Length: 364
Image (cartoon, rainbow, N blue to C red; front, top):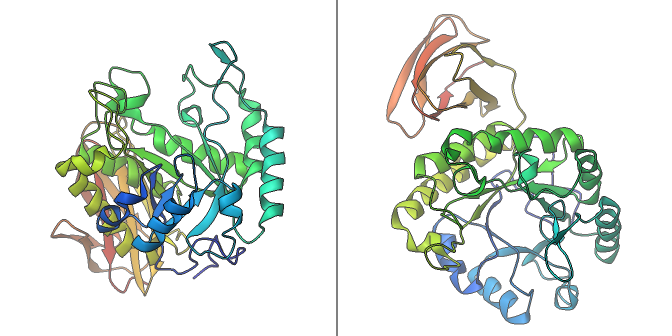
């Protein structure tokens, strides 16, 4: 097992192989116990906080947090409730201007200087930065920063994140055709940063839109991001339309059940996800209009590989595994079925944005 990406910090996120960050964005600590039941292990952001009351509520619920480094936070340097410090949100977006309208983005030099100040005040925790949807959606009209600034922004944090909400937030009438923007953004941040730790934020509500991702689309977004190297998932759960609801996810039984199931699978597979990638599997064919991306892992003597179709539409994926010859069987996790493998080759069907997670026992 490789060193944890958080091993540098004595008070940072857990370094256990069993830990994978699953967060919610800017939620009331009063709901922390309910989020824990859904498999969430981290709050990201606290409204006008942290306050003493917020930290006490999270501590009581056993929920950790990434928050601003204000005066209250600095009084709690020994408190394990806080695992990282955060910048203000989306500095690459156009910023509100005095007197109305919009001005330029916050310069990367400001973010870097703030990062240095945060780290100097507390070197025992990492600093987390979330960028806007321009990371994955170059058509975003709200982007205020030029492209050449993004590698510089990446110098201003230890953990990088971004948010793009293809169905509800990219201002396209057919946003469901662009779920892959999530993976594109992960790839870009990893490239710009030289493979720093990257997380991303996933939609679960209408936000301001008339459209909302279906549970299967949310699952696809999560696994696309994981397959492309995201090391933390945060859910955006606010909704303003038709009425404002800070914790809309908790009021949506269908989506809550889906997110809970996604989180349970991530927690179960955390040691696998935290293990090194293995170059043991490749896609040898699929429908040209529906590429299939995959990530392979070796853990506990077994081979795992996780595959997702990256565009809407049906495809049949053909896979080739390096290793033993002869006949084997792959378990498709969570689907109650197995697939025969002969000489390392097999095929499987992929519907719209399908995700299949495979485990092969004793593949060496």
